[in-house]
Image (cartoon, rainbow, N blue to C red; front, side, top):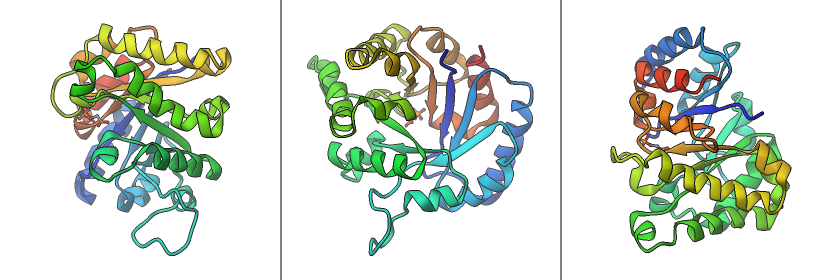
Length: 251
Ligand code: PGA
């Protein structure tokens, strides 16, 4: 049985004092939340702080990106083994902001996914269509292409040690959440597509929804059969909102 996973994606937000207050509240609030997984993906400089504060709690932590290279002359890059040094469990790969602003194409995302797994990290692979793509009816084709870039290179079994996040680009940071039915339709498509290659991998794969999830809409999204929690941007910066979302993911 899949357990739901709620992961915060802080993006480029935070500061030492602000993070400390946020994490203290999340740690306290999570003490009586059971039957779900909880994680925060923080900016690189705050991994040490996340590790110091979250070590020994039920909350995992991770990064929002990593290098596809293991080591070498790559100025400004951060490798998977460096993330492991700070106790990371997860690394987000292929977030739409990385794809759109920093040029992470499907091939690069597949290399980053592979680099994360090679080091023992769990990649959270983000996929999702833009508004123009949805309106021209190619949502499934786009999502399939983004997944195939990884499974075509690494095999479908690679998804057995990964998390998928369906994040329609038009719903990210816009306040426009996909309706539970809209999201479920794409989640079911994704799981069905993967089941075509491996029923077992498909059944066990955690597929998160991301895009303007908040305390007020989490429960109805998470009630859908193929939505296994969420990747949370803005609402992850507010402890009470984030905790409400975590509670909505409880079994
Ligand atoms: P949002 O971001 O919750 O602020 O829409 C989600 C994400 O980008 O992962």
